[in-house]
Amino acid sequence: MSASPLKIGLAGFGNVGAGVYKNIEKNRHLLRERTGRDLIVTRIAVKDLEKARPIELPADIVTTDLDALTSDKEIDLIVELIGGIDRAFELVKTSLENGKAVVTGNKALLAERGQELFAIAEKHGKPIYYEAAVAGGIPIIKTVQESLIGNHIQSVAGIINGTCNYILTRMSEAGLDYKEALGEAQALGYAEADPTLDVNGWDAAHKAIILASLSYGCWVPCDQIHVEGIENVNATDIGFAEKLGYVIKLLGIIQLHEETGSIEVRVQPSLVAKDHILASVKGVFNAILVQGDIVGETLFYGSGAGQDPTSSSVIADIADASYALETSGGSGFVTHGLYGKPMPIEETVSKYYLRVEAEDRPGVLARIATVLGSHDIGILSVIQPEDHDEEYAPIVLMLHFAPFGKVREAINQINAMDCIRDEPIFFRVEDLG
Ligand code: HSE
Image (tube, rainbow, N blue to C red):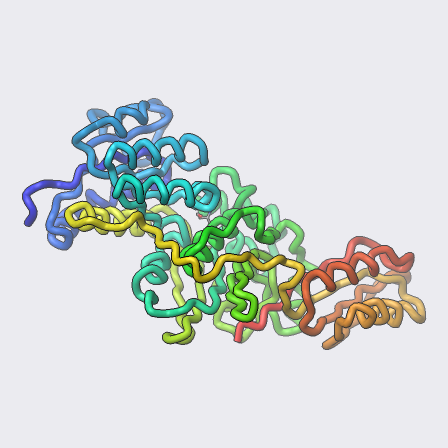
């Protein structure tokens, strides 16, 4: 065993931070055997010393001062679990400048400012690890970075927000409404402290940006991807999707278009065929399908949120950092400049589910079909249930492959027709192979 222990400064003792501390203690012996070093948390920074916590803080090593961690010459590695962007950025930057490796689970930080941070890491010759930033306990970062290193990644499609998947599962299986299902997810500790980023799709989008950047060796800017959340998914559409043989999932889609060298990156609630493997991913679980040109299709499944699974990824990064600090590792991100252009959402193509509430009189369906036809959008099937109210009927149309921009234009035109009540609802239907 190597003589020197790895000294860790832990910034943040929330759900995941406390889990990291607890689980390093729990598996201390195993970790020592496997890494050849003792992993010791020598300092912990918290915001509030008085806060009641389910896991007791070791009082002798606690501080409220982040500088006490970054300026401590004994500390080899900083684990950033404070969340947010500005303070976390400063913490990671100063840690790297002071010669420390960094482990972070902060997806928003990396998606927004990863490019700057990896440049700082490169300059100072210290790595950043971020397995916990994407899909909690699933080792997807290491897989793309190492296990699939010989592949051109052709596509990544995944359920990468456990809270949304939990909510959609409970809405479709237990008939809960959106608010009830969100309340359950919060009570179980799956949602972020502020669940807005979960339900508006941005938590998944930050993860998709990290995966896209890693897969294609270039940073995908946050303002060049299309993001929709699950706030507008309702029982009516879950019911129609079910009748048509689909479930609704929030999907992150990342796809290379070799003809143009552009990368499609988007997060949208989408219909997935019930017999597709992603349809069987329920509750807080995440799953990610990765298609490589050599390996073919691979699937990674596991807990995408929660204290123990996420801390498992943080601890794996700590162990990796421990090796890298003894040798000399890279920054944690490799740019290769083969690809680089995010694809505009208007050009992305899929099938669609469209529901309109239309006046029940002759000619209405024909008018809708004419608008779709004039945008070159084919209709795959139509349902209009007979048991509707007297004046308005729901019409559900499954649309053929078409560019998102054209579909949006056609739907705006349909929405403006005098025979339409409420804004039409539409979701993508993902043909995942
Ligand atoms: N709140 C996230 C989720 C986990 O529900 O998947 C951390 O990103």
